[in-house]
Length: 481
Image (cartoon, rainbow, N blue to C red; front, side, top):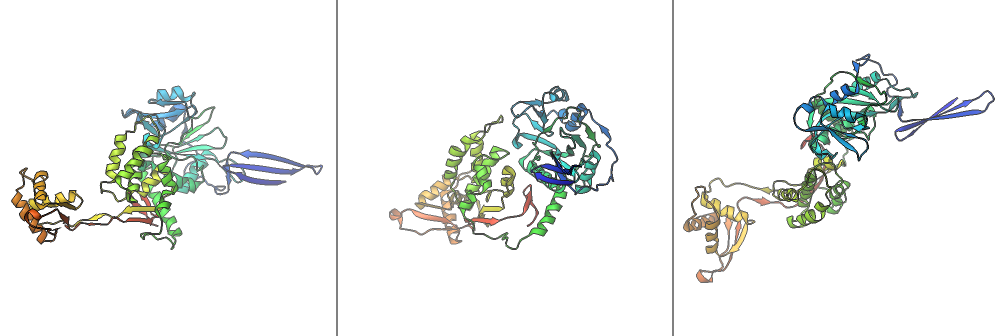
């Protein structure tokens, strides 16, 4: 007798060849919607011998929802008959009403809007996994063994393990403390979930806070192992430790973190993550995507006018239409913010969060370095502010300059500035080397003069493109590489 095991994606084909008494061969094949592994062949029960109880469908939804329907925040659970027929349930009663009609549900909750995207999710409390593993001999794991696999492998205990329509396969639910539905939070959630998937070997495609799972039907059993709520910070710390350990093993000397590398602007625009932003292939806030893309234009040296022309006339009209409106005024505000000088460039973390594509680049523009004068009076402050508001230099007749400063600048006491005081302080600033100009004539022959501000502000407008393999969470490096 011979046995051949072949893997086809997430399926396994087992072919058995048997020799009959007449020396002929009998070949039988069976396709399993599962992956065979010898990793857990010898799993031992250490923590549990049996589930605490089996749940009814109503009890199952009550555990999934918890107290979210009681918080008066219009939280809703989405259920699906298919991807076009959706119901938004705001109570257990509604969930039970549509439980037989629908086939799938999303365990995390949305707020008001009916669009199934990260942009609209509001409360994340469940990490579900699609467990399709079999022992190397094809035998299915028991629910208690699945529980042990999670606890012994990653250290986190499931709350729910439910059967699926495929015998021997399960959906495993880890409950954790509530996480808000921001793009950053959803991204961190997904990265942690993906790492647990890699550690255990569950379905790599069944991840994300908005992924849907089947509603138990046709006698499928739901096993409850207790309210094993995990502190999300523990999940985060576990993830940081894993990636830090991995980074320590995979660091390469060829990487040039912190040094400018010879990457051209053309290659940046051809990066898959950047093209995803440009083509609206992202999951998250359209406004966040617009702001990130505007910052990229800024960091790569595009003018505000050039960026506005592209973003308003080409990018915005193709933004996906969703139930939550996206106004052009929001994009205009993002454009102003991107070019305000408060930011040096787009966030690597945000690009990855929106597109789910690794982006190992840091792109930024040099910033202004400012040394403030501490002994300046309000007249000198008015002169400096006037020139700074006009890019650090103006060309005009001195008399008209002084008059314009008196007319446009406001004193702390709300009084008008004196022409003579501004003229006197302008000369003092020239003596100190703060404002420089060269006279071109006297009296009626005096022409426009170029006044330049040198008050300790240095501008570095170069664009820097650096390799960055660090791992970020909420804007901070959590693991260096």
